[in-house]
Amino acid sequence: MNKYLEFLRNIKSVAFATTDGKNPHVRIADVMLVEDDKLYFLVPRGKPFYKQLKKNPRLALVGMDKTYKSVRVTGNVEFVERFWLDKIYEANPMMNDLYAGEKRDILEAYCMKSGVGEFFDLSVTPPIRERFTFGDEKVEAVGYHINDNCVGCGECAEACPEKCIIEGESYSINGTRCLECGRCVEFCNYNAIDASKAFDKVE
Picture 1 (cartoon, rainbow, N blue to C red):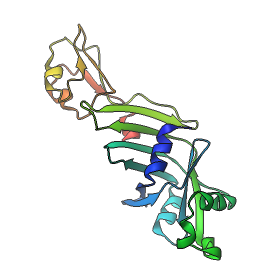
Picture 2 (picture 1 turned 135 degrees about the horizontal axis):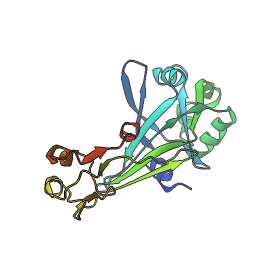
Picture 3 (picture 1 turned 120 degrees about the vertical axis):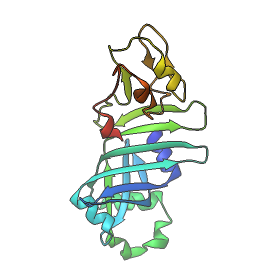
Picture 4 (picture 1 turned 45 degrees about the vertical axis):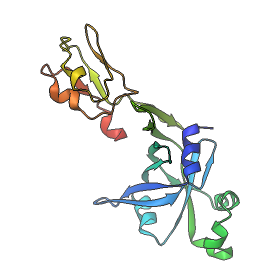
């Protein structure tokens, strides 16, 4: 079982972000079930949320626990067979109070079978970042990287709020500690720090 998907399930109520093609939308909804490293959710057909997912079936969600650990994932979603309603109701008995009996017929189950994610731990200093995937997604290199233009002047290391730039003949960045704020880029006079082309895909 993917521990980060379970983390989201244990938080349960997390922020879900979609787009209608023009404007972003965010709301709090529940992670209803994790099975075989897939995330399952419910949505009533009458909600704008449902219409947004049907038009653009891509979802981003994020949750943070009381210790300031957070997980966020992004992936495509698809609506699944009706029998998943029964499995979700078994795992979430309180649904019988909200949509009892035949009233559940307004609900649709949908699933994120694969995605990219990030675990971020703000409970420690410096913070810890770890990226992960599930399903058939691949982790792409993101964040900032020092290239061959580096002359070893150390300006980037001085500028870094978390001191995660490692000294050497050519400096390097510890991506698990990097806040990805970009301050090192602004202080480098040699164009020696690049943002990955995959950066926007995760952000």
